[in-house]
Amino acid sequence: MSTTQAVPQRESTAIQGELYMSFELGDKKWKLTASDGRLGPSRYNVNAGDMAAVAHCIDKARERCKLEPRALVHSCYEAGRDGWWLHRWLIEQRIENIVVDSSSIEVNRHARRAKTDRLDGDKLLVMLLRHHRGERVWSVVHEPTPEDEDARRTHRELARLTKERTCHTNRIGSLLVLHNLRPHVIIGGRDWARWWERHGEQVPPVLRAEIERESARLALVKQQVKAMEAERRQELTDGKQPLVTQLAQLRAIGPKGAWVLVKEVFGWRRFANRRELAGCLGLTPTPYASGDSQAEQGISKAGNKRARTMLVELAWSWLRFQPNSALTQWFNRRFAGGGKRMRRVGIVALARRLAIALWRYLQHGEIPTGAELKPATS
Image: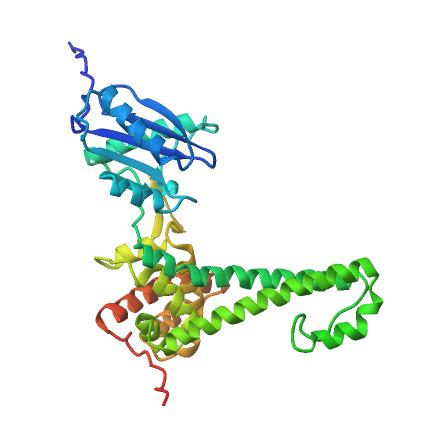
C-alpha cells in the first residue's frame, strides 16, 4: 500500500536582510523589479538615466521589505547599449551588480512565448535569486577597465569606416552601370578624378550631382581611415603597444590582426586554462546527444565575434606563411586531403589551437612549435 506525502514548498534560500533588484533598460524608460526573496516583487518605472529616481526606488524597496537603510543590494541587467557606465555607478553606490550575457538567459521553448518588460524584469529577478543561491543560470560578462574599454574604439571604428568605404565605392559603381559606364580605374583612387572629368558628362545632371556627393563622402571616409591608420602606426613605432608588437613579430600576423586580438581579448582578459579562452571566443564544440542520437552542432559562437572572425582569417594566413609549424602540419594531416567542407571545419579547429598558442606566447613567451619570427628590422 503506497502512501502519498505532501511535498513542502521549498523555502527561499536567499540571504535574509538583503535586497535583490533587476533592471530592464529601455531607450526612454527603465523598469526596476525588487524583492528581498520573501515578499512579492515591487515594480518601479523611471526615466532612462535618472539616477536620483533609481536611488529613490531602492530606498522605497528597502522600506517596503523592512530592511535596514544600509542593507546590501544585489542587482543585475543585460549587457546592451548602455554599456558599463551604469554598472560602475552601482558599484560606487556599494551595490553588488552583475552584467549578464542576454544570449545565456533561459527562455520557455514553447512555439510562442509572451514577452514584455514586466515579464523580463520578473524573470531577471528570479534568476538573480537563483544565482545567489549558487545555481549556474547564466553567463556573467567580465568588466573591462575604462581604459581598456576606450582602447577598443580605434579598431572598431576603423572596421566600420572600412565597411562604409566599400559601400560608397559599390554605390558609385552601381550608379555608373545605369549608363553603361564601367570605370577601368579604382573608384576614389588617384586616377578617379581624371576619369570622372572625361566621362562625367555622359551622366544626366541629377545623377551626376548624386555621384559627386557620394564621391565627396567617399573621400572623407578615406581621409579619416588614412589618419587613424597613421596614428596607429605611430603608436606602434613609439613602443606604446608592446603586446601588439610582440604578437606581430610572428610571421602570418600583421599589426591589424594583432591589434584586434590584444584589444579585444589578450590585453585585459585573464584565463585560467585553454577551455576558458576557447569559451570566451565561442570556439568550443557544441555536442548533441539524446538517446541513440549523437551529433556535433559545431562551435558555440557565444564569445567575442570580432576576435573569433580575426582568428579564422589568421588561421588561413598561418597555413600560408608558417608551413613548417606544428599547427600547419597537424591541419595538413587531418583536413588538407578532404573536400572544401572538411577544410572549412578544419580551419575553425586550427583557429582554436592557434588562439591557445598565441595566448601562451603572450603570457609565457612560448613560441608556437616550428613557428618562425619575422626578421628583425634595423
